[in-house]
Image 1 (cartoon, one colour):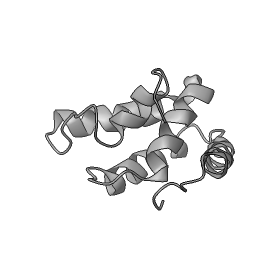
Image 2 (cartoon, rainbow, N blue to C red; image 1 turned 180 degrees about the horizontal axis):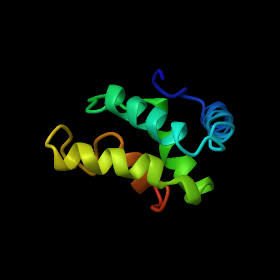
Image 3 (cartoon, rainbow, N blue to C red; image 1 turned 60 degrees about the vertical axis):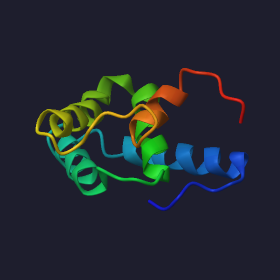
Image 4 (cartoon, one colour; image 1 turned 180 degrees about the vertical axis):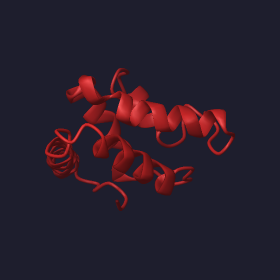
Amino acid sequence: FWPPPHDAQQKQVQILAYVEYFGQFTSDSEQFPEDVAQLIQSCYPAKEKRLVDEVLATFVLHQPEHGHAVVHPILSRIIDGTLSYDRHGSPFNSFISLFTQTSE
């Protein structure tokens, strides 16, 4: 998951395409959370903002019934000390930006 495109419309199209793609795998209730946990483990901590940050946040918003598959591994990484909470850092800034207005 590379850095997000600079064009806002293209970025939104890519995010929604990945959210839809992730949604195709939710029917496997045991494997999906494991796969997402592996993705999160491989992506975080990270210094740069990437498309995966916004995909995960948007996925939780669009499919809250599967939000635990994203939130639990992030919380686990905070608890074990692998990931530190920083509201401006990844992936937290992407979750926060869904509910706050920005000047962008």
